[in-house]
Length: 410
Image 1 (spheres, one colour):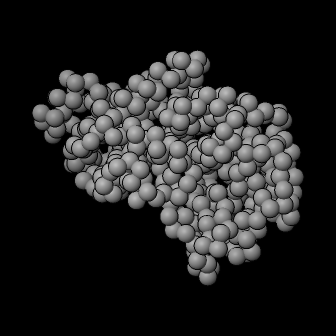
Image 2: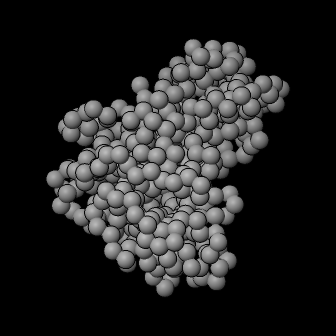
Image 3: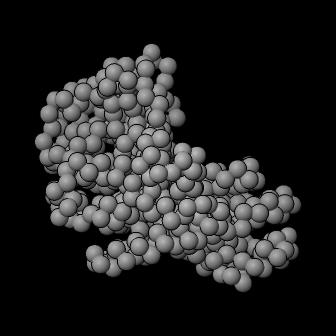
């Protein structure tokens, strides 16, 4: 049992909203987290993965919702999309906070028929695979620290070897795979993808050429951390562009992939406006790439992209419980300058982060950060190069190097 850092946020949401949805991919721990409220708060529990419960609800949603005892946990609600309207009707009669705790493996905001069903009545709590801090039993504060000019970022007490870092990336953050050996972890990933393709996607949409989805996933895995080029992907997968768009939307809806939008503002810059593509978990990514530790240590190019995916994912996890709640972007000017990650707080202040799969840093590693600093002036709080070395050093005004494990040691 891992303590989830989002739990305090979840408790606060249940204290003020009649409906709270824990939103995230299958097997990230949504049900485990929700069931902690069975004894703590006296919730009842029903799951739509149980066929009898599923059929009972489908037969008469209005009766099902009115008859089940409240407060209630409803698990895997994406299997019955119509339930959102039935819950809305019930909540409009009784707006007691914490009445419904839902879990879902498909993002309702990306499904047109669900997007407005519970507007103003439901809070959504995103749950991702385990963060490195959660694996160690601690709540990371890196995101909040980098936006606080009065707080210094601590140098990690322990040196993290590249081998140890790559092992973390290889395993990923799904709770079930922690402690499994390579063979068992590979079997779990294979069965997991099979479930996603044969159940979750089937529940959401009738799609043609479902057999092409594994090939598409492998191709996407090989292109993570790159700008998304749908036309190129379609050509390489031999799919029409419209179909590729639909497949990507489905994979995003069930939290297998996500797009990182570009950062731009009215500062007189011409910028690339294409999103970058990432996978939800680097353990899953490593499986799709057929990576093992030996291959990781040899393939420096693909490993650099995988490392970027790992760090973006860790920052997204921390953003779900941080006080800052930043938006996460990338930056690329048409003149060629780029920054891997741009975090922006609600006041419009930004922190730029570059990622280097190297134990050494050179002056040019700060080129993109210095360009962004010059263009954004007072909005620019810090520029950080995260690298596989062990020292935290200044490289100019508000520019720093930090070891990668600073992410979870703060």
